[in-house]
Length: 59
Image 1: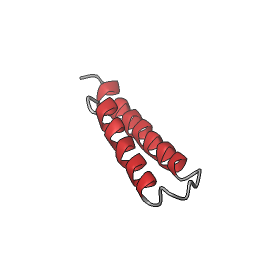
Image 2: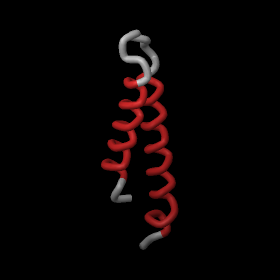
Image 3: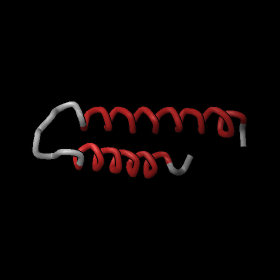
Image 4: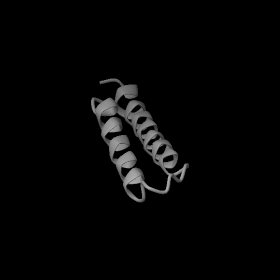
């Protein structure tokens, strides 16, 4: 594999995955709906992690 595929692409995938995970996690706690409690942020973080692994898993 080329230098880009070995070094740059995994770093960009890690950056993008972490940004997606953090962004969606922060959006989950932005609005306090009262009834959701701790379940809403937990589900948002779990689904964000699943989406990041699904999208960036090939890299």
